[in-house]
Image (cartoon, rainbow, N blue to C red):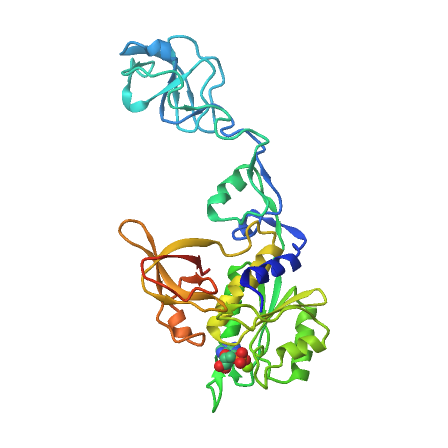
Length: 402
Ligand code: AMP
Ligand code: MG
């Protein structure tokens, strides 16, 4: 049995980024940058008015009201490109370039046009620089604004668009094949017969894999038969970057997944992790394909996928931080740990009225209790060797994707 941290390290060490690809900006959401994003222009690209009003010289309006001659208009997209002289003003709109010679903008509410709009009275004085964003005040051309390995969220889209990234280099999406094993399984559209249950793991893994950025293929259900498993695993591995199976990895007489992998010549990196739930998790390589053999119980699947397979899928896309990030929360109810294994127990996160993050452990019936798990938003991490943690103590939590 190896510790969880060591298992994650092994996963990371065995995972290589896939060849990057170029995609359109419109398809970029959720992808991982495979290049630094560099500003191709200053921001703003010119001295920009922040208000609708009049471009003036601050010195001209030091005593008010000040009467200035209106000599032109600067609108967004159509500036007034002459030199503005003393005692002159230019009508200006938000986002428009400030003319040479002006050093401030007074907002329109504090002005009054007179003499058939030939003159404007500035009713309050302004300091030099007022309501102007100077060229390059935000970003200078050549500056790196986003970095390789960051995942692209909606807030970044404006930056990518504004610096002309019509196409972006991103990590390729890993192709993931998903294969539930178990002779008791029928597909969701079937009524389970005697001794049968519906497969849920294929759908759970597909959902989490999609959240991790993979393209997913669900394979037909596999029965507990080593020869059959060997054939299906070999086929699946040949067409995918990652194969994720569920079931058949514990110590039962019909648990054949590991045997099938070994007989196919897979290199097994680990097969038992000091983790609760999820001890019998297998990580292997078959040819160029990474294989995760997850346990069969649905909650174990969710936990082990997110600790290990998610980390690999994100690392393959070049993620800077592929693994789940721990946060600290205050426990709301006593919790039992395990002596030998590190626990990742389902919980609901919320904040109290003082803003403290609280972790409420779910009441659940163990790793088969997927109905209780349906409410989980996070996992509470209890280190191995900690017998119990009391309400009010701090715990480490990781948020569940979803
Ligand atoms: P196993 O690891 O194959 O012994 O499976 C452990 C438990 O998980 C058993 O109760 C299985 O019936 C259940 N199980 C295995 N695979 C699935 C699946 N794909 N969907 C739902 N439950 C499963
Ligand atoms: Mg089974």
